[in-house]
Image (cartoon, rainbow, N blue to C red; front, side, top):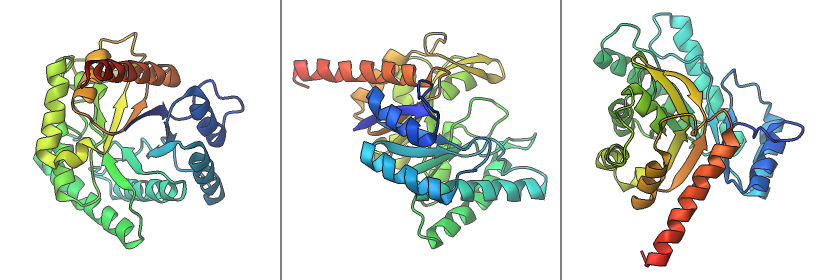
Length: 283
């Protein structure tokens, strides 16, 4: 099954809080919410436990987004250590809250060759996973494909990390991939290529356990500039949802548009209408 949800508390949530956000997600007819720790993991254990209980009651799938201030390729040792601590804290809090996976931007290239940065990232990420495994924490660690050419996070890089480190799988941001290629990854055949590449590299398992981010994105030759609504972007979201249906993917789709719940509902409506078409055709 493919679940649709919001990056954070829905805009229309009365008395904004994570607990009320989960309830609002269910009221809207959505299925998932990503806990946004982008400015730091400040959630108490007591609140995380309450969130887990409410999410279970409402049957809402939870994930978490780690802080923006993560760079495993920094030249500053204290920045790398702080980044490691932030990833660990995100995973630990997500586990208490009942989250299934965490996502984050891994690093910037900082002028280094991509091959060198890959090795550095792997050398730091592997021990993080080992610590979590020793703690009995089985939350999926999901580095995200990134939208700027200065950022570590091509599809190939994230797939290779997932091949080489246990408990690591990609978060695929289709809008980031399009921005990174300056609008050249925006047709059905491009979306199909992404899904084929994932399956070739990681097997059917990844298509059965997808973590997707989607929004509109304004971009320049250097890549991502800012998020926009789907309607205000060039992202071909109808063909994108068709590819999801054709490949029978499962997992979650998180809307990161400025109007998070409205675009999440739009995508869910389009996706479900394609399901209805298939049923009518006996597919």
